[in-house]
Length: 86
Image (cartoon, rainbow, N blue to C red; front, side):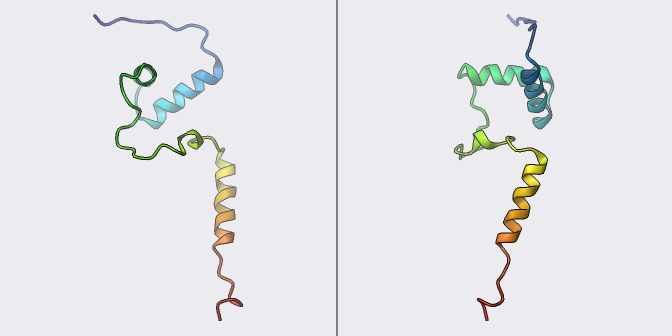
């Protein structure tokens, strides 16, 4: 039997997280919540195509500006010092 559940008083940060998860997965909010429940109950793994999980906790943790700053820093580090490589 399929059940309907109503959730009340969802904290704003949890609601934002759910909406972001649904957006990233290009799915409905309902499907995102069911997916999270399935994962939490061990009924389904998060993404079976992934083979590495060591950096998962960092995914989505940076703001857009922090990401841009990091990219700028990497570009600066990858510059070639012409004096060294003559």
